[in-house]
Length: 449
Ligand SMILES: Cc1ncc(COP(=O)(O)O)c(C=O)c1O
Image (tube, rainbow, N blue to C red; front, side, top):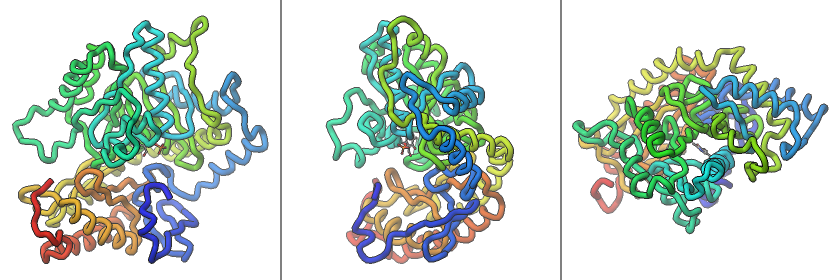
């Protein structure tokens, strides 16, 4: 199983999810769960939309598969055109992949190929942020900033460099709010601008718990990139397709990237598909003479996946799902902020239908849990208890412990109340157990990380 401690299922069954409908999924015993994570931040239009399957079936009758290597087929042409029409600015070129890691991998390679075609072949490095998750293939893993995911697979692709993220929860109040943006310039200067190909950032960073950018952060990053001839890649594998209330996450924060990577919500996960969107200026050097982007995947832009992607856009447009998220996110956030009265709730952050609650040992001092405590809290109590009560969400400690919520974009008041009705008692109980010393490390109170 992916990212799964197999031993966790030595004494109980693997949950088998057999059916989905709207915001809910059902296991093999018929038990219903509120899918507060849209499976993995991806079933954006919700479960059980047979029209997406019908689009795939129709496509299979017409043309089950043909490749985008030297040929094209109607669905990939149509989907590329629809995506380009939705994308901001000059992002008119679409290169399909099968998923997010491949999209990130492709964007980095495209950045290198672009610089090389423009006469700057030494620009090969990629700057990303601490704790960020950009995928698991070797190039994408180089961008990923989670040591536990990287270290076992070293040596990674050369050229990765990490900078601080925008998690301001523990920043001093007088800290310059744009210091994390300026740290990108320091990194570019340290590495040498003529060696840096691109900076890759998520609009809201998932890993670590929905880190939002400071006001002006992306504008400053854009200026820095322009000053040093470095490309800006917006990794929107989660943040596009309505998750933040817009087709693309960069629209929410009003910046123009040179490339955007997408996957997940592009088909609402009814079929595997990803893409790199590139500006006209990025494509330009490849349009002449013998130049080409020497890269591809057999299944990139698979006709059935593209047919599903088109049907997914139809649903999102018909049901105005971006507008719906913008209209409802205030209530979603209000519900989560309402949990701040609990001792264990340290911070609530995020945007759109993409939020995290950071759990703390001591609210006053913002003291976090050590590794053993986090194990006891998340794996020993919270994830099992939330699931048993019928809520699927993510408890995560790649950074400090958080509970993440990212419901389907069709979720509304009824689901928000249901989330609250499960989270509140479970988080209160966790707080009570901590107060009694039950979920704390046996070694006693260790210094905060
Ligand atoms: C921001 C981001 N980039 C890349 C990826 C990798 O996508 P995939 O799992 O489809 O390879 C993910 C996956 O969660 C992601 O969140």
